[in-house]
Image 1 (cartoon, helix red, strand yellow):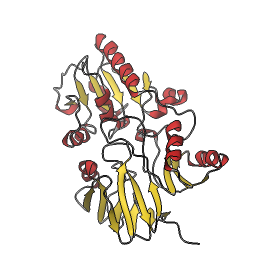
Image 2: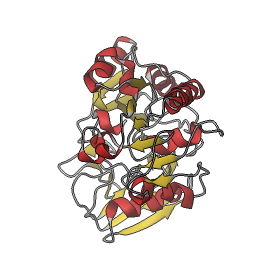
Image 3: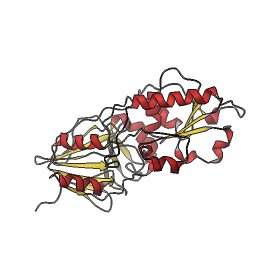
Image 4: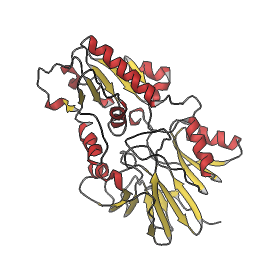
Length: 334
């Protein structure tokens, strides 16, 4: 029996036929990267290949060491006898699925992905393959996403109400991807200025540098000490909640934007005034549709609800099994 084209090792997902790794979690000589989130793009490898639109984000994530090769979507790169091409995953700017072809067999590693429209990145591209490696972050029927437009309208109405009471609107979201998607989704007319936490601002500038249009923002760190934030929207990472950084805002009203807000218990546990359901990961209907679109005869599932998804797919007559990886699925990453 021949070895799988891609298999987990101590350093990451490895393709022996092409001698490269996909999103390795330890330093390697050749790494193909799906996107710039920290659990997928780790520093220390010698050479990286990644989709061109996300190179600015990747350079910020990896630091000065390591050679990074930008690859246009759909253009194959040869690693010996193996052809590798990157295709839009719709997750964040520059996110990619990795298509690997060797001797007529095709595997696709999805990385993280979503099917919903997102003006800050290229839309997901369905790919036919023999084996599909899929994330399973929200692989339960309860996870179904409302339309982004309705969520953005809710956030805007909430902000208007808070501004009328001269209370700062504090919206927590993941700094890379979610924050920029929220900015892009907001209606054009705002109740007041938009401020960004220092962890969000440079990543937002990377998006602008890549040509993504976003509304004007200011950095909190550049505001006057006696700044009046009464009508403002402030976007900050979840780690800022409850920190001393929050003391500059008087009586802020807080909200959290995440797919995890779909569950009432998560909303209660977070303790925010509002929870908004918006995710950069695929929901349950989108996940099943994607697996159908690939036509894969084998599905491998990673992180999140991997075991539950395998059980469901097996019950539907599909060949599926979990694939152990170190990719994350914590609440802050969505």
